[in-house]
Structures are given as structure tokens and as C-alpha cells.
Length: 92
Image (cartoon, rainbow, N blue to C red; front, side, top):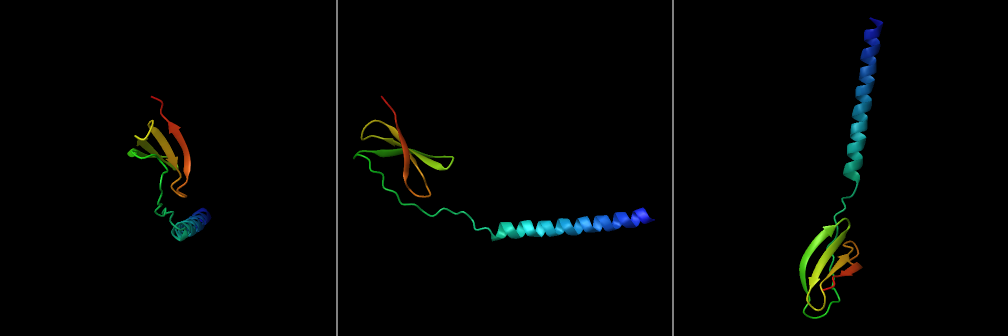
């Protein structure tokens, strides 16, 4: 009989602790601001005749493939700041 009372009390405590933990986790996730990136306006300083062939997201960067206006190249852009993070020129 004592074991049954102890088990009932222990399970009740576990239920209360689990429910409290669940509410705390849900509250933290709801109070955290969503990381919606703002729209970034960017002007690439590229020669006349350059066109965008493709844009791809790579990890935390945007890879923009450019054609024309010289050799083909890929420009890496940080979408948060709009800054040019690097460039790879493709030799012909």
C-alpha cells in the first residue's frame, strides 16, 4: 500500500514538472523574435552588358552567377548587410 502511495505521488510530481517545463519552453519560443530578414537593395558594380544567369543560396550567402561584360563569374553576397563577400572568376 505504501509503495502505491509513493508511486502515485512521484508520478504526480513528474507530471507537474513536465507540464511546467513544457510551458516554459513554449513561452521562450513564442517570446523570441522571428528572424525575418529585411529586404536588401544592392547595386553590383559590374561592367555594362552583364546579366544575372542564376542566384543560389549557399549556407548564409547568396551566390550570383554573372555572365557578359567580361569573363563569367560568381559573386558572393551577404544578404543581411548587402555587402559583397567575395568573387570567383571563371577562366575561359
